[in-house]
Image (cartoon, helix red, strand yellow):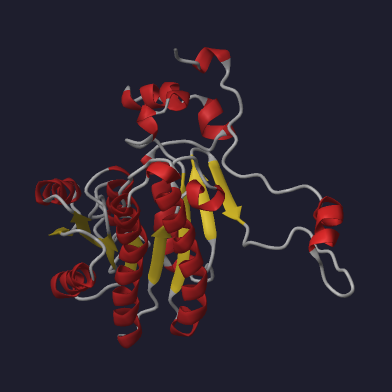
Length: 317
């Protein structure tokens, strides 16, 4: 079925009449989100720092009968957020959905990470999410639109990852903001959720552990079941359905959540909760803690992601 709903011009789609902004949607996951939103009826504002890349993304949507427009600008500055919202309203008449996907990587260990490495990632991921959501939510509230805010997180923000101090901080911060926005925007009927995707990207393509999955994807073949089921690792298109669902009226009761998706797996991440509680009358001195910390709190929490061993047939040298 084409994006215009054919066959049958009166075909109803869940996002018909709605308008979405997707930051960082020139390629990869962001493009998959934008294309699926368009297939489900939304008009889409594409965003990328490269004008030609953004234009190409618009062309792919229009080629299937969808509606899209490009904004070539870096996410982070308030001016870009204002331009995105203005473009949505001026071009399509309204704004219903914001997906904050734009991001960059500057990976290195803590003692080698420069101020610029840290600031660049925080500016695009964390500040860029904040400025875009502030602008979009403001317009939605002022115009009585029960909109949808969908911010993209990462497993790194949930559990940490070696060499990604900046990225982990940004992605953890995004989930913290989403929980706060869910409270602040509830009265306006605006939902705010974080999506934690696990998919084949330019970054995972360089990781030997995922080589067999990346090879299959590049060849247009199904990924091995080990990746799709056991790891919850799939394609960009596997994530796009959740984006569309959260953008729809069907998800009006879902807000303040961090939802993981990848391959065949869907996950609901927990909010941080105390896992052990102990009391001592008069409080806890150093001596008390040194003598009884382990007994008081039990097993410590793990950090980082733990991947199971690759089956022999999926190993690559």
